[in-house]
Image (cartoon, rainbow, N blue to C red; front, top):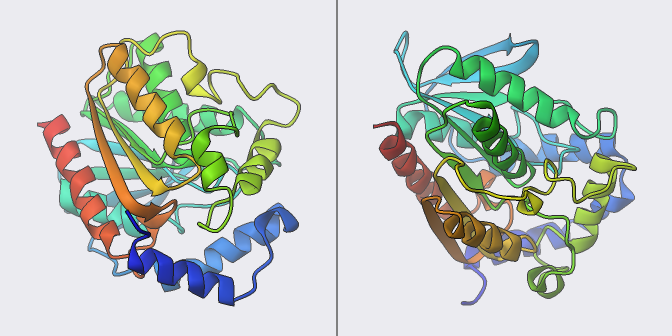
Length: 296
């Protein structure tokens, strides 16, 4: 279908700003730009009790929908290409999921590349997930983009290490290092995230390590059998669309229960743009509904 009108307006607005492409920036400049733009695009902040703390030595932000409640837990891993993003840039979606799913959301401020390359982010995410599971509450894991990548990897580790997960919530996840899939070529420029930006992210994240390591490209894992049920969300005008679809297909072929949510006309990144792309609100509801069902 045609590009969503609000997504198209957002892209026109960004183009009019004449911003340098991300691959022309240093990691520090990219982080600053993402942080600075967040308040203008995030949308209304839903109520939650917020605690900034550390779990297993890793900084986290905890979102509780109610004071002192005994709640199931979602471990959230933010997007940003493993190079940028923070608990601050993803405050709005985390608030929405906590409020609507009636669960505790633990947003992980994992280490970023290139200062801390692969597998530092994986190790941070795993440390928090393992500590949360030890509290004996139902646990799910989720994330968007690079955070979806980390969530998928944590689901694989959880299977192999005996940690029960109720759901993996994968919002337009990075699942493979192949930059030549059809959606990468069809959506290489003009839709926000570009093919060259993804090459920049991968290069900073992996450094000299081969990109097809299964804890970086979970699509390359030898088997996906036995991992937690999944919700996989993909966007029509997103370079990552086809790897998300392929990952959902591999999960199903391995006998994993999968809810595939396709977002026609939509662009990568919309999940944290609720202030300018209002379909994010419906996406929060879809994810919250899947979480409630998984925790029931």
